Image 1 (cartoon, rainbow, N blue to C red):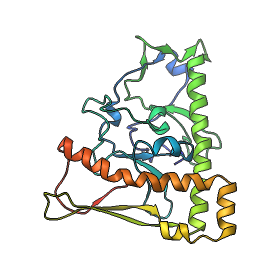
Image 2 (cartoon, helix red, strand yellow; image 1 turned 90 degrees about the vertical axis):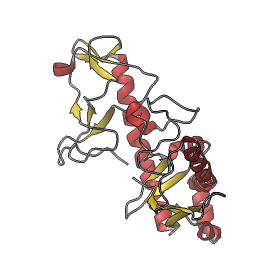
Image 3 (cartoon, one colour; image 1 turned 180 degrees about the horizontal axis):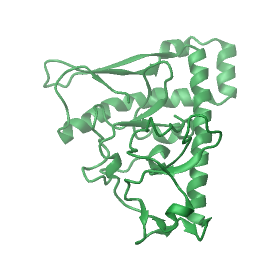
Length: 259
């Protein structure tokens, strides 16, 4: 979940440049009611700080592989976001993940051996640019209040990402994760729609935790996060129903959910 070096760009980012008063002194931060960069993203990383809010809007799953991260699941197929219209405006109210609200900025190591993170931005984004309407990012050669707020948000995101990694380490140690599979068969369909390529917490393994384990995850705050994840899984069928109404259901081939 932590920011990736420029050679391995995170989803939604097309390019990365370090922000500098020497080069970008005239740049402004722009606001918009639309997020076209997010319109075709079906899953984005989520921090544990967001679970209780996010589980009301969409399923929370975990990516496949040895180093899984929590994902906000906005659609069941690549390129499908059931919460946004084609132009990037919201179709219904929903909780917007911090990962999305952070864009087009992030903290990244510009070199693999760099000790410090640099505040970077995606220069292809219309949310930042030189001149025009918007809030200045610099006051002379110093950061403006707007830029300080952006930096604070990005720093808070990195701290939340570290807490999220701690959560993932705990549930892996408890051996709670299993490969997930969802099979949905509409009434008018001869075959079910099958979705794989993600992980989830196994309810039976969770129920079988002994007293000391339950006491530990209750004391360290993990218990409500696990429950929020499990409750959110019921929304997978709601996402499927939204895709059906939007005409975005693909052919009936097993499809991966993760990123």
